[in-house]
Length: 431
Image (cartoon, rainbow, N blue to C red; front, side):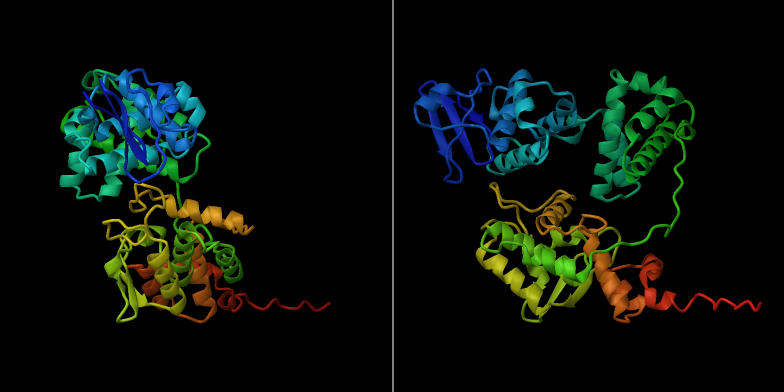
């Protein structure tokens, strides 16, 4: 029987006649022994591959090892749920040899890329029905979020990410454990997972847990309301000060990017769009080829996070950077999205943190130290420049895609020219 070894660049098939290499992207071959999970030394001696020591290789070996332990014998039995089980449940407590060698960073995106590509090629059978991948109780709750509350897919995924560790701690059988759930258990989980974390995580976990516990009480899984067991987290609207990157630092970052490589062309185009239009990183990720209207000299950024669609003129700088990337840097792939990852299998930038990570890398490379290192520093910098140029808040709100003007009021804190008019003259005291 044929067995497939997963790798982002190649596959190796094993039969009774021996190993045979099948190249997917005309790159060097790598293999693992799917019989016992070890790197196949005999394949190395036969010249199939020279080594297997890159992070992507080791991540694939690690995943293969877990598939073998779980009794997976055929590639058609591999589903997307196995990747999620490996990423969310195995990795946090992993002590495997391959896991210790390859570390944790980037494993999730690598394994998801493998499963996504092979499922599109028909090698694996794709994803299982939802009820086979997660507990029935959690599936019931996610269906409620989707059908009754009509929440966005990304919001539902966020709820699921927060709740999976909570339900894993409760253990099986889940239906019985949830009935005897105590306030001490809820508070203990919340405290352990929010201690010394970024301020946004406690608020996110608080909302997900309260919503889930309220749902369980409503549907009869719980006999009493436990939402009060989660401590309140006080936040104040417009309490912060937007801190953006200066125009000089932004141009220094752009000048420091090497545009002789496809990766450099892509990152330069992304940062050029962030700096020129002040859009969100998610809007850049979602930008499609048909959103660039070359004949009309304008560009459309899709609405995200409840904002409005932004339609603005295509400047020469932004247009030239996009054109260079599309002509000389973008891989040939059947996707409508403009920006793709630079490693096979080529696919759109799906992770919400992808743009922020590449921005942080380019800022460090240019030795620029803004107040924050995510993609949002360009958005704050754009709004600050507009205020300094005398643009009205309504104009800035339209350019940023804000549906409500209240969302733009926070930028009045950095409008120093106007703020200088507010202080009253200090009266002089006569002796």
